[in-house]
Amino acid sequence: MINTVIIEDNQKHVEKLNKLLKDNFSDIHVLAVCITVNQGINAIRKYKPQLVFLDVQLEPGSGFE
Image 1 (cartoon, one colour):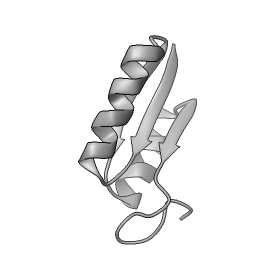
Image 2: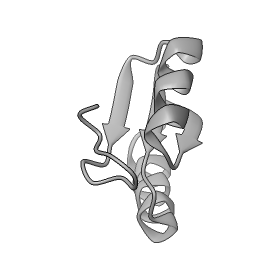
Image 3: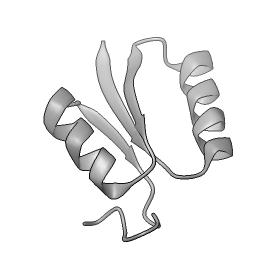
């Protein structure tokens, strides 16, 4: 099982990514979906995922923060 966090502020993109993962990668488990930089940082610290799907342009700030 590959534990994953998604950091994305567009709900349609989250839904599309979740569907692609579910349909094609049964070994990927999404632990959290975050819509802000701070939520993403907290989720990464809490869950220590092996994989992060990160939106570069988040409001406010960016995924590189």
